[in-house]
Length: 79
Image (cartoon, rainbow, N blue to C red):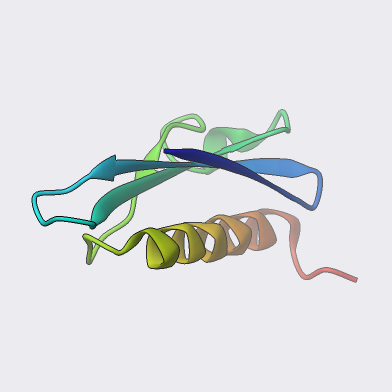
């Protein structure tokens, strides 16, 4: 399952894959949308989240927050 979230001029692309347990998912995210993404992961590659698997709702929430935090680190605080 995929979801794309816009944040501060970037796109956070979230991908869920089924885990071993029923109704739980492993989650990765990728940030796209700027030329200086090489500082985020392996040249803007997919970043797996730890401490899973998660339910669908938590997987999307945790990935969105992680992606937003990474963008905030790159750009600094929002005005």
